[in-house]
Length: 348
Figure 1 (cartoon, helix red, strand yellow):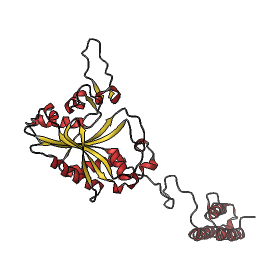
Figure 2 (spheres, rainbow, N blue to C red; figure 1 turned 180 degrees about the horizontal axis):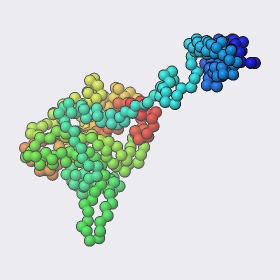
Figure 3 (cartoon, rainbow, N blue to C red; figure 1 turned 180 degrees about the vertical axis):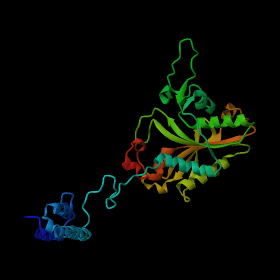
């Protein structure tokens, strides 16, 4: 068809029909590219002005400009009706597209339990204390009144470390991964003693401990303990009972009943285990459940770090973090804590 005003009129009618009949953003985009794109028919008509006879150029140019304007208006009307289907630039943000959800992490359930328990004892005046996980026999056994030959010191019950030395060098001090956080109690007393004679101690000490146990639902070769220690003049078993009663009611609930049952620990005398009423743990089918051990610091432990048992007394207590978390959350297998299974961890 020759480029003349009639051609422009026909092209306008065709373009208007294409925009008006577009029934999807994709169809609208196809019509836009055909008529208004860089190589579209409207642009071609504007470029054809120079090919029209001189006497017709004015009329043809006016018609071509009107064609372009009319088609752009028709496109805008259709776009308002359907939406814009043109592809976005590479650096553009499509605000209609669902956002990318960024999942936030949180503290592991064991860390949460430690923080909660330490927080309770902080409010009771106990300061946080920490110590090394690789210990010598003095801090892990001797100072805790666990003598040579005691079963707790056997190779099968500990992770002793093999330290290599040149043949001419002195034999190294036997070292092991600590089997209890009671080692931190000894170090806390040593630090306090270094500050002044019979200095007051009140610490709460969480940490990892290691024992070569066979891993099953209730045992693991690595687990966590929290131990507390108080040393000063005039402390009695009554002070210990009041502190632990406040803790138990804070952690398990104000209505929790508890009892002290005689027991034996090498580093305390007298010693006891604390049981709580199993009313909240009906699936256990027994009246009482042991949750922690405690007692008055044995005089031999006080003497080991330079305290005079005639001048000061103290009490100590300890509990397993995994056990406390399992009771609180109804977890039936200790292996879940190290499974790294997000289905488990996201619950807490």
